[in-house]
Amino acid sequence: MATSEGTILVSSGYEDFNINVWDLSRPSLVLEEPGTEVLTILPKNVDGKSLLLFVPDESEKGEAVVAKIVDAETGEEQDSHPCGNLQIEKTDVKAVYTLSDDHLIIRAGERKRFGVVDTNTWEVVTPLQSNHASCERHYAVVNNRTELICQGFMEKDLDICRLDSGEVVDKIVPGLEQRCYQIRKDKEGRVALLQFLHPKGMLLQLWDVLSRTLLMTVEPEGADAVTFRFGLSHAGTHLALGNPCNITCGDTTFINEGPCVLEIRTGKVVHFFPEGHAFLEFVSDSRVVSTDAAQWHVWDVTTGSKQSVMSIPVHPMIADGLILSTVGDRVLVSTGDKKTIAVYDMSTGTQLGSFTFENMLKECVLLGGGDLVAARFDRKMIILKLHNNAQ
Image (cartoon, rainbow, N blue to C red; front, top):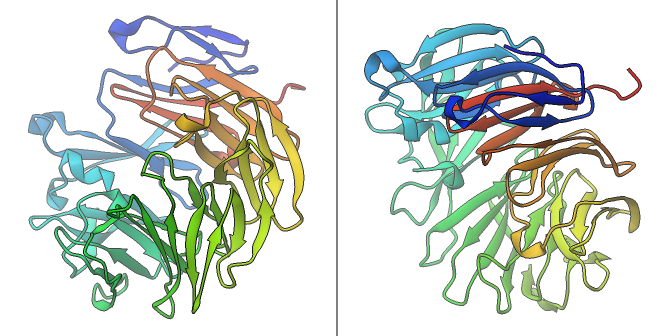
């Protein structure tokens, strides 16, 4: 483990899977683990102060998985658990979700079904009965973390499972020939957004999870999976669209002509983006980010006012996945090459720090109230701590 209180940290080269130069306003390197493949990183705790890692179990020739729990503030390893009894393989860790401080949802076991896992004993306490999803795109935890929506292999309908009993209690029936390509949801899981690869290019369905009713159907005109930009607000009340679309809301069908934000329940447009702007992503209940390819702009969609401007030049055609993580007013972004990242204060547009890596990132998240950055490469995981410039 190494630390630095200056503005530049130089480490050894690619042979040791280390990073050459760090530039983050007065950074401290809290943890550095080179040489071992890290399969995924995610906050173990709901408050984000502990980090959960999955790595190959070398004693099992790298085919099984070991879970490690790390204190993100000190870098100390708190615990380590072989997961042989869960029968987790490397590909299964793509479907892991933090349910509470001591419970996870993991796709594991002989039949590769999801189950609720107690991280104190590392045993499945509630096996779920559905024919479960093959990857993270095909499931979502909904209804205030009490249910799981998932789509089984070759299934067109989606099961809804109770997480306390494991029973399939209902289904969502899209009524389409195509399988769901991706599931998104709002923060509390009250609204589920289903994305389909349609013969005409793309199709969205928005469902009320509690009542199991279809709220809205969106079909973009002349857009495919690459060029169609859309986003669901954290509160599940608004939908942002970056392309002209045919929209059906209840018994009403209308055409949306340009990039805008609309209310899901009514279909009413509440915010139009300026000409030349492309929608990027929602970053809170009411804040949305757009780009004009020279800067990022943060808007309050409830008032229509611009809150701040962040100088992050990026072409909108490569904008997918550039917003990596948000905590409060802090946002962690990538500038497109997945080697340079920065942390900004969205309320002011101020850059709080930036990193330039030698190798391409696999994952990167904010932790500890936005003061910590955890990054994963193929054979390296690091945690860095942001420092106030006044310190």
